[in-house]
Amino acid sequence: MTTDKYLEPFLTVKDSGIHGKGLFSTIDIPEGSKIFVIKGEAISEEECIKRETDGNVYIFWNDYNYIDTSMTDKIKYINHNCDCNCDVLENNEESLLLSAYRDIKAGEELTIDYGYEEIYELCKCSICA
Image (tube, rainbow, N blue to C red; front, side, top):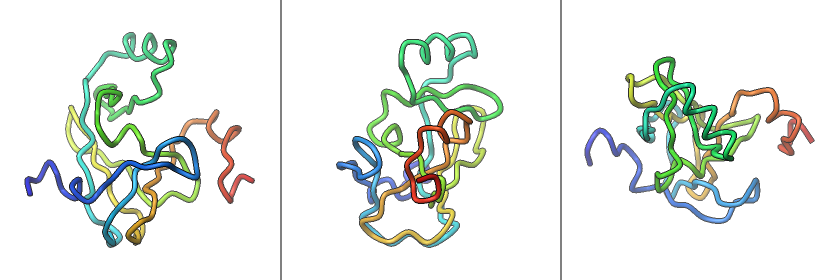
């Protein structure tokens, strides 16, 4: 397995109880594990605003670039949860790293805290409900 793949072969997309489709692990993942390199198209702030206006919600920021993941097979399906089990960490100018914030059981949905104010108004997780 290459370092860009990490645990990607053990991730699957299926129906989510949170929203639409979700990203799930097929194996137990220990806290602190590097799960996945988040890559996509690096775009400018201007292009990010345009795409978000057009409904693209699959864009990450890595302190250097906006990264549009809408054309990816898996990471675009990661859902928000205020009690998330994953962190998004800096990696390099063109990518980020998905890491296990806590132990994750096989079959569990991977989640992150999207970290923008509007999400908390819409969130229906156990913390916000």
